[in-house]
Length: 151
Image 1 (cartoon, rainbow, N blue to C red):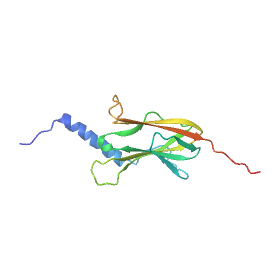
Image 2 (cartoon, rainbow, N blue to C red; image 1 turned 120 degrees about the vertical axis):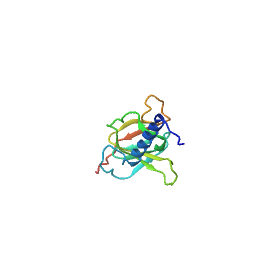
Image 3 (tube, rainbow, N blue to C red; image 1 turned 135 degrees about the vertical axis):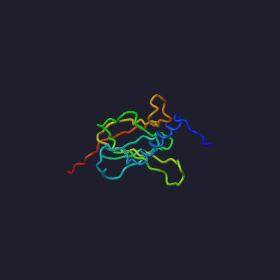
Image 4 (cartoon, helix red, strand yellow; image 1 turned 90 degrees about the horizontal axis):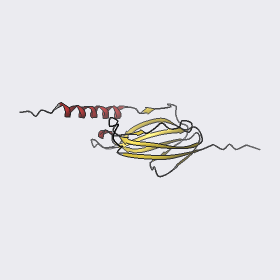
């Protein structure tokens, strides 16, 4: 005799697997698709302030595992007079383990001087009324470029 699985248990699992497949297969969220000039600095520690000059790019790397349904989201769009989101992408870890996590890489460009806090929340997109599993706040300070004048 076969065991029958009720639909109320099958549908949430099916939705989860489809969501994970879409996240893993997607190339990432794109903001400005232009290539970034120069080197991109990488930050992983929210306790460390990010200090850059106008025109520089930086990435924030956050541990993630979309197989659980969780993903990082910005709590609010950044002040686009200071920083702009260039892209967001997921990179799986280099392992053959099924369900192993990876990291989300959020890349920004600096466009003007000022200070901004980038607030991230790690949650399942469909659990809107639930508190995030984790939060991360990155303080970003952008300084003007100093132009040296020849005499």
